[in-house]
Length: 168
Image (cartoon, rainbow, N blue to C red; front, side, top):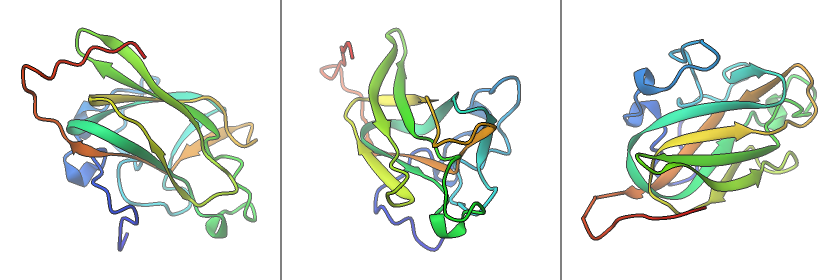
């Protein structure tokens, strides 16, 4: 990748400090070879999972005050199916895990198949671990591909007066 194209720091990027050994297992398969946290969106360089729904847990490189997330799929021009993105995630939710507070929904979003390959979704809450729950894809019955997911925000510095209590 010659440029990131968002101009935003990516706290889910492996080269930015995201710990592969801290990424949780998915269906008993280690995610060490996961390309989702690397800047590569070439055909086949994705995290493919069976069916149209799945869950991925990413441990971020740092605690952040998130401002947005970006989901990137293969550009239509590179799609082996003639520009059809049936394996792209369609509807997805992002959750945050906070120690002693459980899991909270940050938001539910729709990746626009007709839009740009790289799409950004705005949010606001302190987080260190994400649960990305893909709810459906754009029609492929056998699998869904996630090419890249990014977490953007500013570093969070804990101060006693900044205690987050939320019920999303």
